[in-house]
Image (cartoon, rainbow, N blue to C red):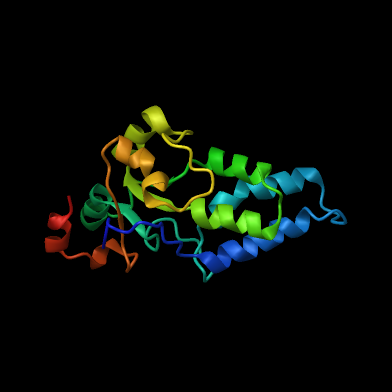
Length: 180
């Protein structure tokens, strides 16, 4: 468990690569897919790409980024009361996807760099939503710099931690207490 890394670690690159290829294929000139469905793909991309590489929907346990309060909450009360947040608001991710050249490389880069779930408590989600529901305090463009990706959380004094095991039940009480 750490907060010291400099780049956000994407835990489901294969899924993001498949999704980028699928979306890029739909945007080819000869594609018979109607514009409505192409746009629907872009709007669903932030959700779909947070699935695991095994193609299982993992909304909470299985995600690598958690706050200390969310870890503690899960250990004591389970999932009820937790929220699955997008580190970069979906609105911005969709905007970047709509504006990119629709090549699989450009789509994959956006998904891989910007789409990361963070498990937070309901109270933390409310705090984030007060000012940063659909905006970022910095211009993220297409980066995987951890300070930029998690800048909304830093602005409201919420620390985000990477759980290698992706399961907060594996965190020992002494480790939890040592988190800032």
